[in-house]
Image (tube, rainbow, N blue to C red; front, side, top):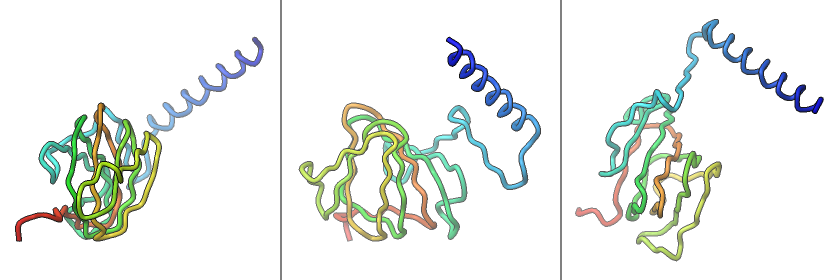
Length: 151
C-alpha cells in the first residue's frame, strides 16, 4: 500500500512538473505536436494521408512525417530517392523488398518497431485488418516512383 501511494505521488509530481514546463514556454526551435493537433493531408499515394511534423519533404531539408494507411491496403513495388527511417506508431505494418509485390515476402512489424530503408531499393508495403500509422524521417526532397509505372 505504501509503495502504491509513493508511486502515485511520484507520477503526480511528474505530471505537474511537465505541465509547469509547458506553461513556462519552450526554447525557440522547439516543436511539440500532440496527436490531436496533427494536420492530415492527401499523400503521394492515393488513399494515404501525411502529416508533416518537421521540415518539408518536398525540399532539400531533413523531414519527419506521419503517414496514415487504411486497413487492407497495398502499395505495389516502388522506390524513394532518399534513405529513410521508419517507426511504426500504431497497427501492424507489412514490408517486403523486390520488384513485384509478393505476399510471401512480407515481414510484419508491430507498433513500436523500427527499420531503415536504403535509397532507391524497390519495396512494397501492406496493411491488413487495421489502419496503420508510421513515422518516416529522411532528407528531402522525397518522391515515390512506382516500379511498374508507364515509361
